Picture 1: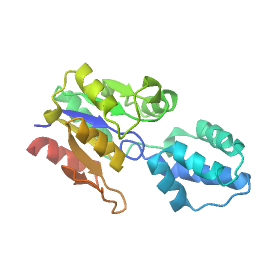
Picture 2: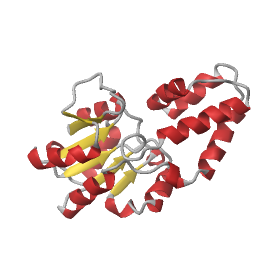
Picture 3: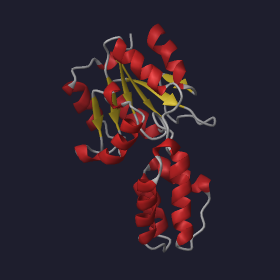
Length: 208
């Protein structure tokens, strides 16, 4: 039975990518570089750092990234909402005595900005961010440490992510894995479940 959930943040729990891609494209344009949203999204899905380095290697001034950070800081949180069903699923886990956790590469300040705005912070027992100092996914270090710290049973824990590196880290830590598919995306590795609507997690939690 699934008792606990471990969430990725961007693209899994919160629908942040559309706004991030738009602002990233605008910041590049300010500095004279044109890029497609598909290209930017593909790079961001690996890591934001990879996206930044990609354009720095093509001669874009580093100031473009500073502009992006400023625009994201000024962005109204309403433009980066939680995915439909996220609150309901997390509330169910907590109500049933389970644990919700977040493991993300996002900065603590910006993660809490969205969680606080949408009044979801209290649903999570811990939010592991880049400041926590763990190796980046797909290394399972953050998952293994967090599972031990909260004394969770990996076999009763489901990890949700929208990228291969999310589910790879979760798999290697021993949890069950769920790939959140958007626009028909598929994982390149075997996972336990694939959903395209977070409310489908309710059935998985109940039936597993």
